[in-house]
Amino acid sequence: MDILFLEAYHGGSHRVLAEGWAERSRHAIRVLTLPARKWKWRMQTAAWVFAEQAIREKILRPDLIVASDMVNLAEFLGLMRRRMGDVPAILYFHENQYSYPPQVEGKSEFQWGAINSSSALVADALIFNSEFHRRDFFDCWRRGNRIMPDERLTSERFAEVEERSTVVPVGVDLDGLDREAPSDAPERDFAAQPPLILWNHRWEHDKGPEAFFDSLAAIRAEGRRFRLAVCGETFPSSPVCFDAARRTFADQIVSFGFLESRADYARLLWQSDVVVSTSRQEFLGLSVIEALWCGCYPLLPRRLNYPHLLPEDQHAAHLYRSDTELAVRLAAILAEPAQHLPYPARQEFLRPYAWPNVVERLDALAETCADRKA
Image 1 (cartoon, rainbow, N blue to C red):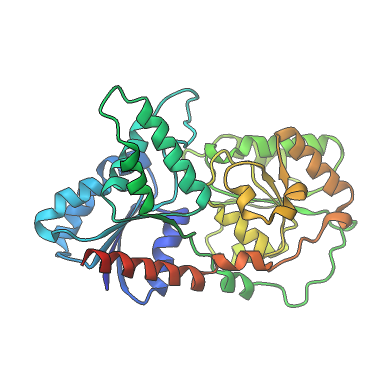
Image 2 (image 1 turned 180 degrees about the vertical axis):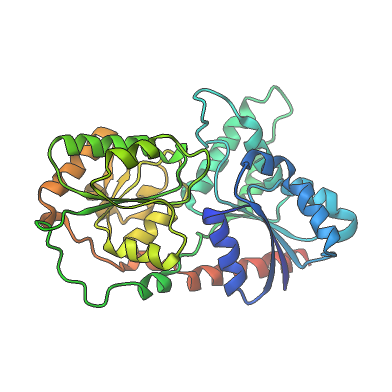
C-alpha cells in the first residue's frame, strides 16, 4: 500500500514512530512532517499546511492516511475530500490533551482535547500507545461531554468510536541498544565509584524536573554519594531548574544535555545504575523502557502508565507514591547499593516493545483498515 503519514510534531516519540514504521514497514510510507515546536500552533494549523503540501507534491490518492494526534484529522480530510475522496484514515494518539497538565495551574484548555475528539470521530481506526492512555482519553472525553451546555454526544456514539480503538506502543530499537552493550563489563565497585543516577526525559514542565532535582538535593544533604546523568530532548523554553542543577551538581555530573548520537545515548544507558521518573504526564514511557532494557534500576511514580510498564511483582520495589518517598528510596539505594543493584537487563516482559513485533501489528492494522473501507 501507499500510506501517507502526517506528523505535525516531529520529535521525541512522534519521530520514533513515524520514522521507525516507515523504515521497517512492508508498505511504502511517505511521511510529511513539521518541526517539534509550538505544539498549539501545530494543532490549529497543521491540517491546512499539510493539505497545501500534499497538493503541491501531487499526493492525490494514497491507500491510507495515518495522522498523529497533533493533526486535526477532520479538518485535513475536509480540505482534501475533492482531491483524495474517501480515503481510510488512522489516528495515532501519543498524548491526551484533555489531561495534559497546563503550565498555568487551573487554566482550562478544553479546545485541544476537542480537536482530538473531532479527529477521533472521523478516523476509521484509533491507535493508542498504551491501554492506560486509551482509557484515560475516553474517560476525559466523556467528562468533557457532560459539561457541554447542550447537544451532547450519546453513549452509543462513544461506544461506536471506542470500538474502533486499539493499543499498539511505539517501537523500541532493542537491537540498537544491544549493539552498544559492553561485552566484558566488570562488576560495579560502588565504593570506588558511586551509582550513576539517570534522568532521560524531555526537558519540559510536564516531566516534573523540579521534583527530581529537589530529591537529589535532599539526599546529597544527607551525605549520600552519587553520580548524575541528565539527558533528553531540550527546548529553548526548558525550565530554569536545569541551569540551576548544572551548577548545583557540577561535581556529580557525568553527562548533561541532549545526546545527538543514538550510540552515545545507548552507552550511557548501559553505564547507568538507576533511572528515575518524576513525570506528571506519561502515556507510554519510551525512555524508561530503553533504560530498563539496559539494566537500570527503576524508581517510578505510582501513577500514569508506569504501573502498567512493570510486572506486578516489581511494583513494591520500584513504584513510589510521593516526592518524599522518592528521596527516601534513593537514599536507601545509595546507602547500600550492592543490595539493590544491578537490576537485570533484557527482561522478557519488555520484548513486546521491540520494533519487529510492533511493526507487524501496525502493518496488519493498516491493511485491515484499508480493506474494511474498500
